[in-house]
Image (tube, rainbow, N blue to C red; front, side, top):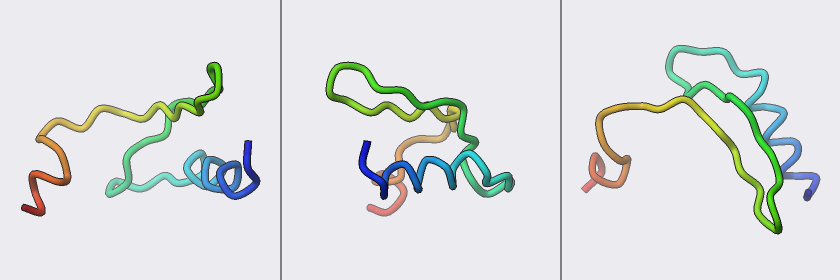
Length: 50
């Protein structure tokens, strides 16, 4: 895993704020890095900004 990505994941683990999506887990499967976060109901950010 790239050092910048590792750094960003470590930041997500530490952030505890009501305005941030809560980090749950991360893992590598095949060649992909997955980051698991809480589900936020209400649509997609692209829908909000359109």
